[in-house]
View 1 (cartoon, one colour):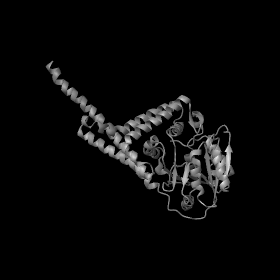
View 2 (spheres, one colour):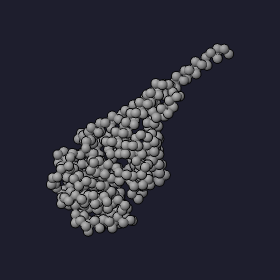
View 3 (cartoon, helix red, strand yellow):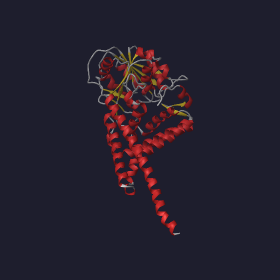
View 4 (tube, helix red, strand yellow):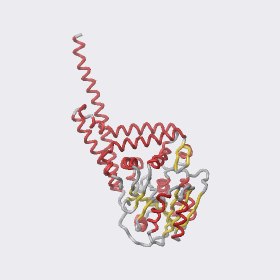
Length: 406
């Protein structure tokens, strides 16, 4: 009995030491992961620069194609910001994609006021097309410009932006130029998630490679995708993207794959977008991301992976909250990890024009982003498809038409 009692503390001590080893390993992995994300973000910030200063130079005709569906609340203000540019080297093609609100009427009014504006009203969606891509194709059929700007209808531009982008495209000998906008306003849920989502986007798309002509990655932005028409036709045109959910990134992808030159810059000082105006819009908009996970098995695996990664990223914050229960060395290391994480979130927000105040509660942003992602994945599992812009698309259709892989 005495021998057994003498052995018990040693056994308990060995067990405690073993647990601490695992705590150190998990914490080390988490901090290392955050360091990796910080490195990716810093590298991206160095290689994806701000759009050069404004210029006023004549340029070839640019056809600005803006599809919209039920966007009456933001359409007029956004389009009037574009029409403030007096250039005669611009034409505007507005596509009313089966709207049920006053979107079409607003477009018609703008066309009556400015003869650079033309309007297309769509009432049906052909099989084998996503609504937005089909609308873009119809606009392309009508366009007369040597350059095409695909841009969402809720985007606000400063009058000098178009000329600056064209000058930069010429200087870079680029066939495609995408610009990152500032995200203005939006619901609290979205604003809390933005810095985290941008970090994820940088890592998932390897954004630091966007301007590397030797890389297998390219970027596109729905707010501003400027492309040389001949290069787009050489890449197979919008037919190549007819079922691609990430159509904006898809444009950059097919241009790069066909041998063209793609460039990405930040233009948060001259380009802004009210991405989603309500929590409902934000949640519905996020649902389309599930199309990149494959079938139901792929969705389940992705849901598990997202959960595990989020927990891993939260480890430093969890350790700090339990400081009194862990050795001081672990607590100090966790605190350092928290500072790296918050610093990474802050850098993301400041570089890309996001609301930086939310980085002070970065763990909340991580948890909310996890919940939004899980909701999207599980809805896709239940439905067997993803809902985007009012249409439900089957998982197999989205997968078969995929050109952008994460």
